[in-house]
Image (tube, rainbow, N blue to C red):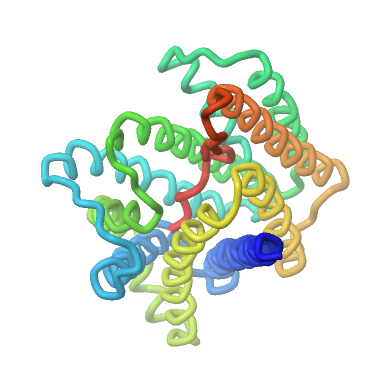
Length: 336
C-alpha cells in the first residue's frame, strides 16, 4: 500500500515537473519572439545580455541567499581554463538562438534545433574520432530527412535565420562535447552551471551588444510609444529564462531518461502549436509532416541511446541496475 502511494506521488511529481518545464520553456520562446516582432525591439544581442544578467542574479540568490543548492567550489584557475571556454560557446549558442528567432518563425527554429543530436554525433565522429554503432546512425536518418523536408517547404524561410539556427546547433553540440572534457571531475547541476557561466557570458557579450546595438536601443527607447510596459516584458523574459534553468534541474531529478527524452520532444510540439496560435505564421501540410518526422526521429534517437546505455551498464546477478542520464536531446541547459 505504501509503495503504491509512493509511486503515485512520484508520478504526480514527474507530471508537475514536466508541465512547469514546458510552461517556462514555451513562455520564454514566445516572449522572445513577441519582443522581436510585436515590440519591434530587434536587438537579439541585448535581449541575450538581459537574460544573462537576470540569470546571474537569480543563480546568486538561489545559491548564496536561499541556499536551494550548495555551491560547487571551482578554483580560480579552473574558472578561466575550464568555465570560460564553456561560457564562450554557451554565449554563442544563446545568441544564435535569439538571432534565428528574430528572422524565422518559432516552429521552424524549434524544428532546426531538433537537429542537435545529429550535429553532436557527426562532430564527435569527425573531430574527436568517436565510434558510433549502426543503430545510432540509423536513428539519425529521420531527423535529417525531417529537417530537409521542413526547410524545403518552409513558407517563411530566411537564409540568415536558418544559418544562425544551424550554427547554433553546432554550438550546442560543441558545448555538450566540451563539457565531457572541460568539466570532468565536476558534477554541475543546471543552477551551478548558470552561476558560473552566466557572469562570464555577460562579460563576453556586453561590449559587442553595446557596440553593435547600442545606438539602435537608445533610438528605440526614445521612439517607442509604450516604453514602460515593453521594458517590463523584456526584463520579465530574462527572469523567466532563469526560472527555465531551475525547472530543468527539477525535471531531470523527477523523471527517467526516457521520460525526459519524450517530454523534451513533446515540448517542441507544444511550442510549435502555441506559437502558431499566437503569431499565425503560415505552415504548409508538408512542413508540418517534416516537423513531425523530425520529432519522431529525435524520440527514436533518444530511445536508442537509452538502450545502448543500459547495455553498457548491464548488471551482474549481484549488481543492482542503474539508470544512465544521458543528454538525449542535447539541450538540457541552453535556455537562459
